[in-house]
Image 1 (spheres, one colour):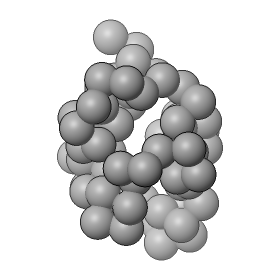
Image 2 (cartoon, helix red, strand yellow):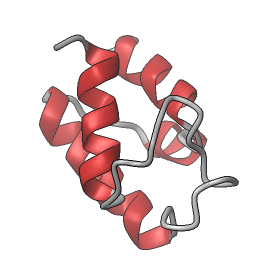
Image 3 (cartoon, rainbow, N blue to C red):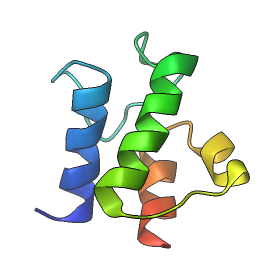
Length: 73
């Protein structure tokens, strides 16, 4: 499983829906509220064994940005 697939799986698990693809963002996903955002951050840090900076957490408002940040670690 590549990073993109792994990240997509994390999004699906945390947001509790399989109806998620690479276009998901806070703007188009009703389930992605502030609590789910924090859970996404924790799951991403744990899943990829990385630590995210506060500004990275704030920028992570869509899948594409999240993937870029993860790939940069």
